[in-house]
Image 1 (cartoon, rainbow, N blue to C red):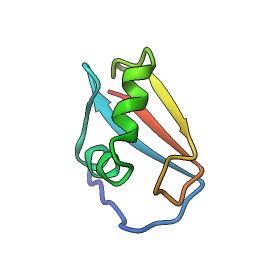
Image 2: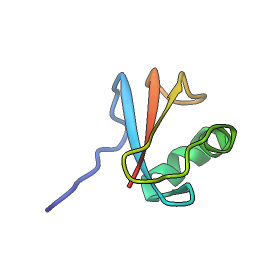
Image 3: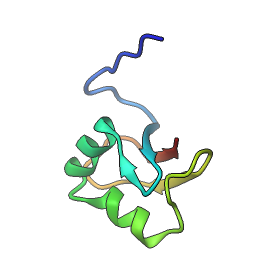
Length: 74
């Protein structure tokens, strides 16, 4: 499978992936830095562990154009 990422895309929602233990994958780490650690703080404040099938929805993340960000456990 070939996956490509588009930089600076405008969307209503953005999804990133995290593995067990709440470890963000590359795109998630980049967005976490852009939000000043907001994704990491939201994961710690919730019951999200990054387990397969888990989803954490963050509304209006700081410094992002999108209205929501989804962290998806893999």
